[in-house]
Length: 391
Image (cartoon, rainbow, N blue to C red; front, side):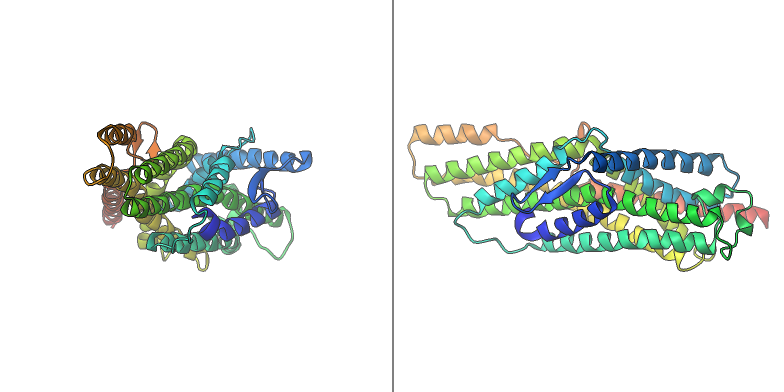
């Protein structure tokens, strides 16, 4: 749960983002809630970063698709460009909308009532895996700026970065402190504030939000098992409805930006990193190359683990409603009371993690992996056939 299992990770992530001035959010230690920043200077810095991020992505797009470079170089550049697009979409909040904060604040307030007078549930296997994955993602966020710095230092022509757009990038030397060194520092700063800010909402809304919903269902299932009277079953139905409200709040934020971008962008990122790791490991200098297998691992875990857990919300909510219906069989209550309870159960709907008019079901991870493998093999065969034609 947010308040008992993931709050320290969230606070640590927010502190790094506040140091970089990359989010309009802070954690209030007194109220134990996320709050919007109010300082005009801090808001101006945040909005400036958003405008710079948008201009940076547009510049990378122009350099990558209008510049003259080989297909291998474009594939390498597409990895970084895809990451920047996903992160920019996740962090964009020029109007300072507080819906993202409301989801987490509402969840922590709900958990206070849920656990009142009861022992804190043990951390589930799913929660342990997601917590480990969030640690890995935060490690990746530390590595990315350093890897980009090293990659540009060893090869200034590495796409899609700004120095690669120069016709004289191959002759750049770092013994003289010219404008190139300032561009390198600017690139490193852009990676740091963009990735830490965008990853905040991806990690603690999609990753953590999914596993927290599953934790809530565990509590409901336990209370259904303990219920023996009509009043206790009615309390379970009310609890399910509260979880249903949390699902609506979560989906209101996720289905607009986060989930569509992740469903569209992460499989593409997995395809590109697989291709680069297999076919271009000899062309990219170390230690800059290490970022590609690291991003490949993160994108694959997201496409398999996170989407699988997201699909479980649909399956387990249907299972909980079935358990509530079965509880009616041996329940000690009047016919009128049983009829009312059955109507209340029928009024409850199955929960889903939505994107657009669709939702993540149990077949989504398999479809994504099949697509990624097929497309990677297609790219490898095209590359091999072109090399054979040249020979």
